[in-house]
Image (cartoon, rainbow, N blue to C red):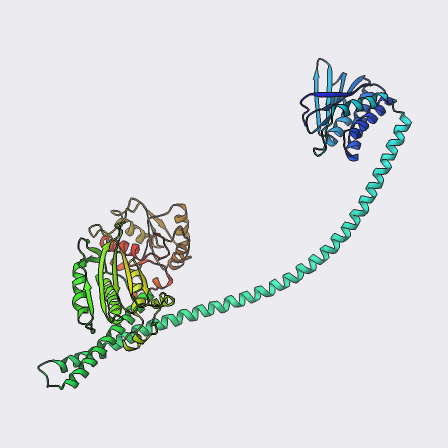
Length: 590
């Protein structure tokens, strides 16, 4: 505490003998009580004054003692000792220590043999300020009061000591009581801790057992999924041959050069041919869906002219319209550049959407159009119809495999429930998305968005850094040589753990990753990478000697391009980079 502002002297006296020490102590305690200090602060101040006074008596000096009160809040009591002699810190070994411990301010000055010790004690802020009249009354009271009798002061000190002892005894008993309560509480806590520990241990055993069961179930589900995929692929291949035979025989029967058929026979042959075509389309969708789900449906990127795609769709779908009140309108895609995408997948998506619209439109029109979005980053294909529409609670369910919206018209038309789910999956493989809006009784609009890339540069971004992850040093050198024209820097990592450390140190623009490595393998490293929001949008190329047919990547949402080591070249790497950009996980924001 630093004493500042104007100060009013309350009392000034000298101290040179033991008797004066009692007087200084008594006056200090009286002033402290008068300005509102509590009992404990009064005793602290008295103890400090006693030790300082006795040190000065032993030193054999005459000291002037001034009691002053500062006028600003909080009001502070200041006691100043002045004498000729040694500095306070040296001259007052006991008093300096006591004052430093019990008071709020202890300051010293020493110049030209004159020593000054200033002590200070704060007055509680909550108390009202002292008026001038109160200070005058305090001065008068102190002046009129006789000097302290040492015997009376000793009695007062003894009484204070007894009071303190009683307080200490009361505090000791209270501490003993609190200690007993604490021990009792501690015993309860220990019992509760033991109980909770046992419960936690039991829970942990249950969690471990559950984790083992979940692990087993996960393995079983994976095996079931793989079996389902193999079944779809196998049955699709096995069904194609007999279906193609049925279609061929139906067409032979309907040819003009064959045996003449009655009108009823010709109608039935047409039904056989239509049913066979529907069944073949279903088989093809099943096979492609199985490939897409297992990650084996890989886009083959080529330059695609949209006018040719629209012309093909117009010719193939016009004959499928049975209702005379329905018109198929295919707008000319004027002014749109060629797309660098998989033309076959694009045709299948649009054909599925148009076929759906034709099936569920009894009158009006089905329209296909395309336009460039304002950002020039996507082409938007729109298939709209004036059909029966879809209820609001079914808008998301229509993308589930084999789900069909219940309704009167649904019963009369053929369908598998795979069309929209298959189209959305293909759209995602091409790097785009599929969205649907509909109003019951008024029609449906489906929008396909595909990214625009320059066919001349294959849509390749500028690659500042590429990370090659492989445990084969010779292969890493080979990849570095092939990437020399595509990037300014090629870094290396021997396994997945080292690769993650390298990515954390400096983010690459592309990762070329081997699947089979010691330690953390490529599949595990890719899974960790795709879980991190700030890293999941890094394009990845799986460069593996394993057969592509055996890889399962897109089903887990890992979004990586596939490139066999046996097909490595600068051109195949360019194609793989384009594919890697297209199949990034859909959770990556634009």
